[in-house]
Length: 282
Image 1 (cartoon, rainbow, N blue to C red):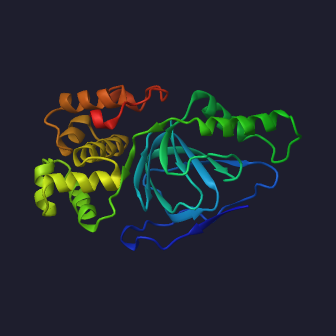
Image 2: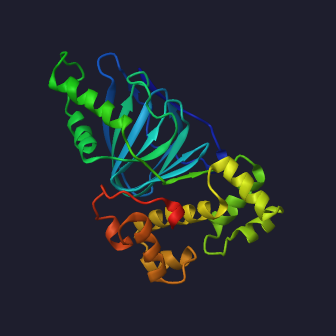
Image 3: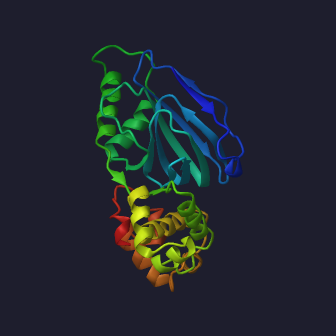
């Protein structure tokens, strides 16, 4: 049995509730597929599941907020949420979502952390096929083989660098919030260290210890994730480039192509099987 619990977390960032509690049973199958479309601007309040969740996005962009950080899910990709992970969703553009709710005991070595993942062509088609499967099935049947293959594919998903981990330290969290509020500013480590009232060396040491990223890597990733959301809103590439601190359309496009493997204008219509390079190269 999988249940959804609403949580009164982070009241300052709480978002309007949209859906009711869902309850799923794993008595006869290891996972439950679920299809749902969202309109632009919709949201899901803070909640958690007592089962694991794979949220696959066919169109639009979903921002997933957790207590550890935020995760931006572009089209054709997915987000893995382990059982018991408090999270909230914000929707940009028309989002077609296909979700798998998974018994956490269905397989050993399922992912134990939140992560944005590449959805392979095989897994994508298996998710679609699973929506039409009966809840009960015979041993050795096609239904059983599809469910089992889905679980095998989940364990082999490639992790993508679209997560933005939050540091635990209150001073560093405040610094991150300042950067998000003015992303066009020059946020080099010297300025950040001055704002945080510490040396550059101390800033980078503590930031990397708490997020596994240097400050400059975190800033580049934050800007790119914000760019994905703004582009999904229909903002022009030039406006997004200037608002995020890039000097020109071409400079932003060059960064985007280097990281994402395609230009911003092509991205939302490109092959989702194209795997981005590390954001630290942005």
